[in-house]
Image (cartoon, rainbow, N blue to C red):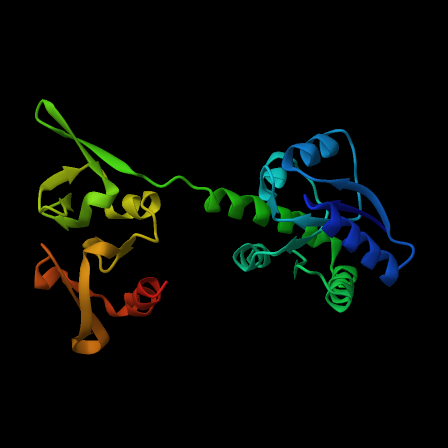
Length: 251
């Protein structure tokens, strides 16, 4: 079996190569690349393997950039010293991920998993990686330019308290309680606002996390929020959103 190691730490790459040979002397490391740029160049020039070992955090960027640039169906085992990146990689439907320092048994188990996989799944895995990379690197809106008569008002998202749908239009309320109409629906706003900062608590309101003063139990399994400039009737977290809301607050 031919493998490629993409790793920016030379000792880590050598360690992985030695472990592979211990497990199976027929495994051949046909290439070791230490950057996104070098890896893309190699794949563009026809370098291939049966399996890739890929460090997620390379010196010149995340390795997801490689698969965003190159179409391939080679299976991947991710390696990383960072748990947050490892968990992301695992959710991308890669074969497996290995936390550094890599142990012999963990590597053996990952190879066994690779050998059991249906090769028709590889293209799907790589597509999932590419799509997740694009989502991870999405640029969320940082300000809104709002036309008021002949003037344009610039509002940064970190100055927003909430958005609310009233009388057929969406209104943005700032943390100073200035109100402006915006040319977006709430559904559209959910797609362009940072989900770590904003949450849609019901069909009428998207609130920013810093605007929330407290939340408390409310009738029929719902929650009630205390937030400046948000009236009680609109400050209710709908029952179907309560669990997601609690999880969002606790991140």
